[in-house]
Picture 1 (cartoon, rainbow, N blue to C red):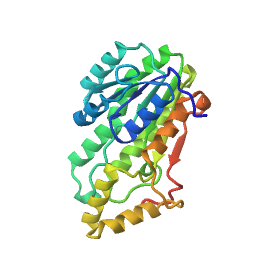
Picture 2 (cartoon, rainbow, N blue to C red):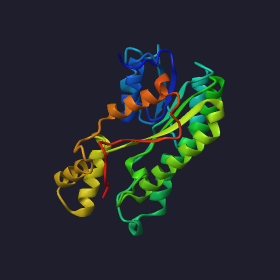
Picture 3 (cartoon, rainbow, N blue to C red):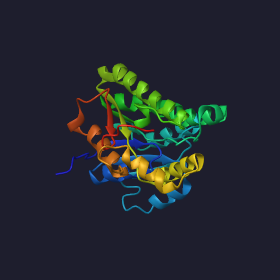
Picture 4 (spheres, helix red, strand yellow):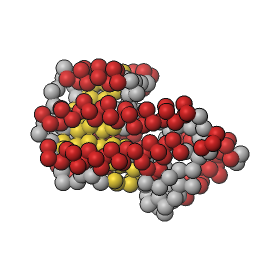
Length: 261
């Protein structure tokens, strides 16, 4: 039997596509209420056709890097519920490809603002709703680049290491409130973002895209892609009652990635 998330209330940032939408669908299928936001209007319009929209699925436009918009999103959620069971900080960007000396300050600032500071905006506002629930779960999406490093992707790697540091700190600060915090480190996800990453790396190295794609897959000892649903299922587990004693952990879902170079 699949894990039950019956009547659990879950906020997901960047939830209208990719890992966020895969996670939302899994949570909905297991009985949860999902409140998601995204900056992508096209993706938001697509999910409005979901049969559970406005019943257990609620979607809002929000730029996660804008503190005012995040605050407005939470105000909208508060009209539906005063407490939540879980926050999934999924928002993130791939950032630029290039060696450090070729990158600009803007490259770094944009990547860190979206991948790290946005998590602060969401987490700060979610904590009070989790406290009212007398416990719950925060799941931060980091990356394999957050436990190893990632040549040609230094802003991304720096941001994902930061996510893990924040996660460890949250677990220590919030444990007394029965609020858990964990980080998931996805491996090589098969999806649109990885298509762009492969294209940029192939262009930088001046090699065929197929060669770069093959190399990414070989980074895992299981020699596999990771699906968006794989991450969604781990999120579902961590926010379920089966994961109620798991906190402060960094959990790779990567087919045993052994390198990222």
